[in-house]
Length: 110
Length: 115
Image 1 (cartoon, one colour):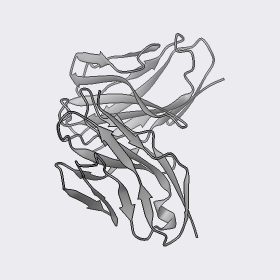
Image 2 (image 1 turned 30 degrees about the horizontal axis):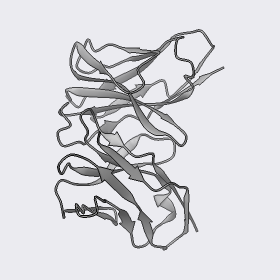
Image 3 (image 1 turned 180 degrees about the vertical axis):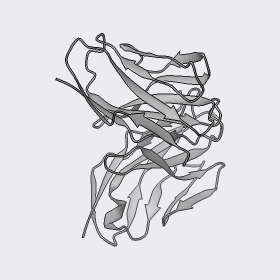
Image 4 (image 1 turned 30 degrees about the vertical axis):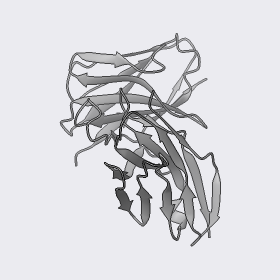
C-alpha cells in the first residue's frame, strides 16, 4: 500500500542553519504530497503541499519540491529559527485518510 | 472562529474504566478522524467517519469505539479492553472523506494517562 518514509530524528541545528528533512514515498500514481507541523503541546497543522509532479510547495520560508523521478518530497529551509522547533510530518492520501510518516523532531538552539 | 475542539485536554483514568473523549467541529466538514500518537511512532488511525451514522475502523481500532450521530461531533470511547491506552489522541476533520485535497484540520489533542 501507499507509504511515506522520512528521516529519523531528532535533528538539532543552530539558529540560521540550513535544514533538510528527507521524505520518500511509495504510491500508485501521483498523489498530492503534504508536510504538516506540530508545535509542542498542539495538534498538527498543514505547512505546505504540492498537488502534482514538479510542483513546489512553500510557506513560512519552508519549501518542498515534488520529484517523481526520485519519489521524494524533501522539506528545506534556508535559515531556521528557534520558533521552528517542532515535529514535522510528511504525508500522502492513501486508500483511507492521510498516511503519515513517523515524524522528525527538530530542535533549533540559539 | 471555525475549528475543532477537543476535550478534555488532559485526562487521568484508572485501569478498567471507560473514558470518552469529545471532538466537535464547526467547519461543516463531512469527514472526521481519530488518531493516536505515541512517541517515536507517528500517527496511527483509530477510526474515521465519512458521513453521519457511518464509520470505519482504522489500523488500531481494537479497544476503541466511536459514534457519529451528528455531523459536528465524533466522540471516541477508550474502553477497558484497550491494553495500553496512555497516549495523545488527535481528532481531525476534512471537507471530503475520499482523500480529496488531503488537507486535514486538527484539534489541539487530548492526553490520556492511565494510572
